[in-house]
Image: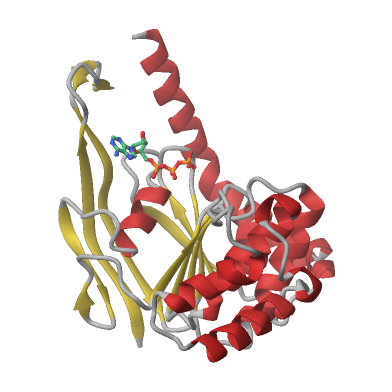
Length: 276
Ligand SMILES: Nc1ncnc2c1ncn2[C@@H]1O[C@H](COP(=O)(O)OP(=O)(O)OP(=O)(O)O)[C@@H](O)[C@H]1O
């Protein structure tokens, strides 16, 4: 069954007074970001969204999360139209978005607190999820006493502790060094494989998109629409060594083939905007 149904979604932003973009060589105070996006995501699927900068990946994620309204078209979750943030949808952003005045444990507990979970259960669940991410001994540390990778583990533990039906992740590992990023990809998969959560994950990294996904959705340059969807039929569970396999390489070539023209188009778009 489809969990998320994105149907003919269009998004136009009205710019602020005095701002404009070039559209067909003419200044315009409106920017068309998404145009006719169709996508059906199955329950429990791991989808990665790849596309050039400015193709509307984050805007699409925000529309799925109910944080931004589509100008046209509709998004539904289990057949019900999404018009505001859903309590069973969790978000993880690139910036860790932790409360600096709360410890790691209290940060995870917060998500449960706002959902009315009782103190004892909240503490147990928060401890459990921190332990899953190897943070058992760090419950009492404040965010500024944790590395970037640890902070992002806390943010993901917080999101998963609420047992979300849908997890939306916007370049969550982009600020991390390459080794930490790979470690976290592996940890996320290991935990996701034990739960039913449907994940939509935005990334700029082709390898990350393939390693994590059941399907990679490649977006066109602005206005963004779905250019192609690539099935990743690599076996699970996936270990780090899969990245060196011939099959992984084939997927890498396929995603890059789909992306190459779009990245070129996006760059020409910026170049002409800079000249004008
Ligand atoms: N509130 C807004 N008002 C006006 N334009 C916006 C607004 N939010 C996003 N945009 C524009 O929408 C376009 C798509 O933005 P978005 O952040 O979704 O792209 P993206 O594909 O996620 O890019 P990147 O990979 O660089 O993060 C950009 O041109 C951006 O400037």
